[in-house]
Length: 431
Ligand code: NAD
Image (cartoon, rainbow, N blue to C red; front, side):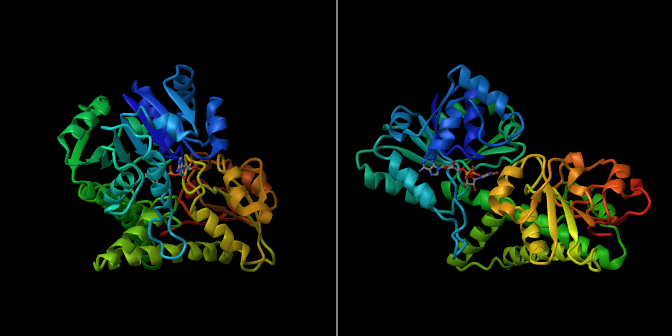
């Protein structure tokens, strides 16, 4: 089938590459000429495990193409996915739909009759209705179906998740559209549940899922706080809880708070939507507030470990919002570093993939190390903020030789404290 993806970001690019790998003819459109130029030379613009190889393969075989011209891309497409950003509005924190509406307006004059416009971006309930009327307004002669196909892939696992999704949700009532989408997703037919629901239900499933996962993270973080005060150990508590199949063992790792481009913005958008519908979602409101405060408390915890040192040198391992990605949007690490900078601390940071993105946010306010050990030179404390596997089994003797102080604040509970060499003082989360 002929597929167009509008927006070549963390969702659009892996989706386009995945659909090309499944044999579809894919054109990816982005208004960012710079990104398109890089992609047109067969290179990736973001880090995702396995993405580069698949992109190069499908680019060389001509199954995937890149353009900034909406007209050329869209006019022959059977399915057009909208995968543009829906960031939080700076004031109201609702989902800002300007990119969705702009893309819908731009594609409207060119989209062929019978085409499907599939909204993959995370959008508030009722957005599909608005996109549909906007396209009709711009092009009254058009005869298209607007559906909701929310995306659930995890950054860092985008390629793996594309080929092995837990479910595919398709929001449409149209039997014709269901048939076409079944054809598009035929590869998944006997692998995963494809659930057809009303468009508004599909839009809600995405927010309800993310708000639930964010709540689960916040819950285990609060339990970790409880363990710290009560003498219990959250590592045992979480393990014991996770053995209950009704609870499950995922998302039970306490940490510095949830971040990334989805959970913070989607919980805020969900809370905003609920207020518009006069529905009380006090649980989610509490989760949002508690999560914001948590990052400040993590910074305080790090500073407390060096409270007797004037202008301490803090080594930071990890800047991305989680392992496996170079994405620093709403990264707890970024916020903790900003908080630390309010004190007199000197910060030297290292991240295996996210240095460039971090530099765009933090500039020269901190120093950047070329590897994890050089960040430790003369440091008074090490703060581990992102759970990159490479940080799990460091050379403790080397660390002891490099660091001036011997404190480690492990905000991800990554290290095996029993293996630490003598002299180190280890602070984890929840014990
Ligand atoms: P992103 O910011 O990485 O990418 C969006 C891209 O869209 C950018 O490259 C931008 O230049 C392009 N764009 C914007 N307007 C355009 C237009 N009119 N025409 C062409 N291109 C345009 O965003 P993302 O992280 O991929 O997220 C996209 C959507 O998917 C959001 O709604 C997000 O909430 C949702 N989502 C994201 C993830 C994730 O892990 N990042 C997971 C599930 C769902």
